[in-house]
Length: 255
Ligand SMILES: Cc1cc2nc3c(=O)[nH]c(=O)nc-3n(C[C@H](O)[C@H](O)[C@H](O)COP(=O)(O)OP(=O)(O)OC[C@H]3O[C@@H](n4cnc5c(N)ncnc54)[C@H](O)[C@@H]3O)c2cc1C
Ligand code: FES
Image 1 (cartoon, rainbow, N blue to C red):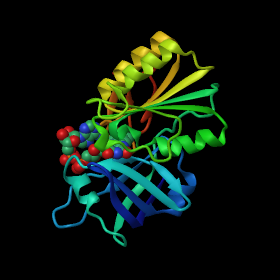
Image 2 (cartoon, rainbow, N blue to C red):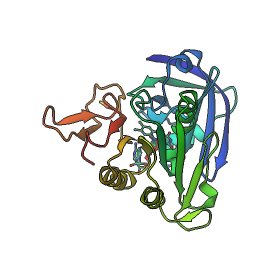
Image 3 (cartoon, rainbow, N blue to C red):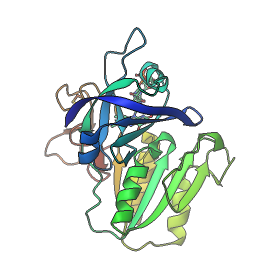
Image 4 (cartoon, rainbow, N blue to C red):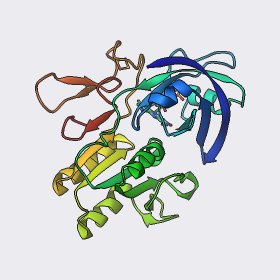
């Protein structure tokens, strides 16, 4: 884990209310793994939020880290207005990465909305490992679609403006009802309701499924106990999303 002041290369609106920020950090870029996140101090421009904001590492491009984020409040609003040459204070890489080493041949990616963020990085890792990749990406409408660096994409929109009319879990279910991919594993990120539905589907289809959880965070490093998630087994009742996750097998946790 490194604590760095990083120079912003660019911050642009890549889809409706979806910003792509690129900043340089050779040290974080060298050690990051898909599924990990960084904790960013969104200070600047007068009154600053006190807490850091967590973001999945979306992609590594040489020494450059890419983040993809929606503006939802003060911190993301401040970040979206950063200019090339500005600096941001970043801690990372943090958390547990996706389990790409394990025993599977087909990687099924399921992304809901801004949950697409960690998948460019994961896709590059899976391609290096020569895995078969099938991507399911769902958005509210066609204006929100961001699918750069993803492959073999099945699109869904809630309003039917592009691709399948429905949710990402519905399109994945209809695919799995017709097809039985060889030794599959699901990698997912999105809103909690989507992950809950996906966990049920994965359980019915008997497919291993890892999800990236989004929980409100403060410290991001396991100190404040502010990001608990209930475990399914009794060994220790709660896990911490920042330290034990954000990646969990759906069989490990209760939604
Ligand atoms: C491990 C992790 C990775 C994340 N990766 C990304 C990413 O790649 N891209 C991205 O856009 N967002 C990501 N998030 C969510 C992101 O951290 C929040 O959107 C951000 O902190 C909001 O900050 P803000 O100051 O703009 O909003 P605030 O003013 O703090 O909040 C605005 C609204 O968003 C809600 N909110 C804030 N944080 C969260 C959260 N973690 N989960 C659910 N609702 C929240 C608040 O309750 C409030 O309603 C991630 C969160 C976690 C925990
Ligand atoms: S955010 Fe502090 S323990 Fe997880």
